[in-house]
Length: 410
Image (cartoon, rainbow, N blue to C red; front, side, top):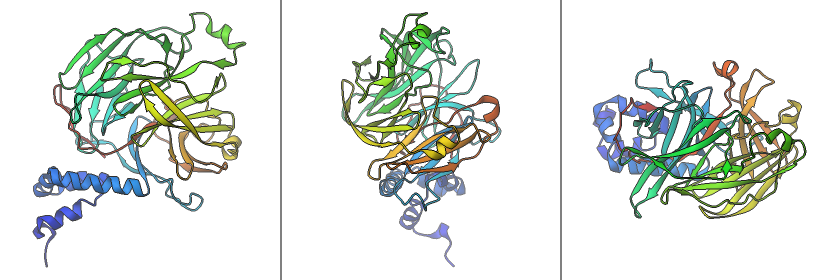
């Protein structure tokens, strides 16, 4: 009887290149031969091609943070969602090679197959750049220290057609108690190639809400922003102003500067809740929620200095949400869309039912399906809403200029 260890290398490569991403760890730990094979360039190329083909055919991957734990999620929005119980599935949970090393993550940012992780530490947050495909990580040391209120962007500079220099933009805060916002007085950029921080002179006349997450696309990072109101005028303005001037802002990592204000496809209202997401690797999407009305828009063109939009669909019949008195009352709610079927999945917490994490499947004609993702051990204590981003596996290597940490794998 032929053992699998005695099979020809080409056949083993063919078999193992079909394993899911979450099985790579098991492959690497099976034997030295398989571990070596899994790191071979030809194997990686073949395996990534298989993964991306499967994603293009019926599903895509997302990385979600729920209760300070990181999960790889499989999302299929291309089937008959009224009969398909596998629309949203957890594929794996982030673990360390040392099970005693607990990994608590508060926020993540995805760019080019790499994930920037901000650890959950009230007194001193840490930054870790991680490639989920290889498991390799790198800890980024600050110039002084990180703060909980800091905000980040993650992208890359195009040195030429084949060379990308990955960078991190940090908003260094000076906290002031204005609607739980931060006043950013200094900006820093970390270069992963040179392993250096530098202070950059940026003076934006706008502000970003803490719960508006950044989205990276084609090496640049985008945020939803609004005008800065003078201190003391916020409460007075909110009493009579119904419209607010919200817009899109982009940081160009090649030029290391913010672009001009980019218009949204609608006039925003004080009752609106907005959030951004990416669609593949070429488009942005924005979700506008107002009570029962949910609008989904996608870009037809997006660059640091220009944007154009089209409306994907509007959903006004969200009864299962309304019966739970659920109205997405915080911005930054993660969502993902499937343009062909005009279907979206929106992640959040249901505060009525034991603060369970819920995925809502929402269609063009108001169809809503709930997928209960369970309640985590920290939900009731910390009230940590889900946060996430789409993920495309990549063999991109992390330049090791700083302290290397233990491997993190699904």
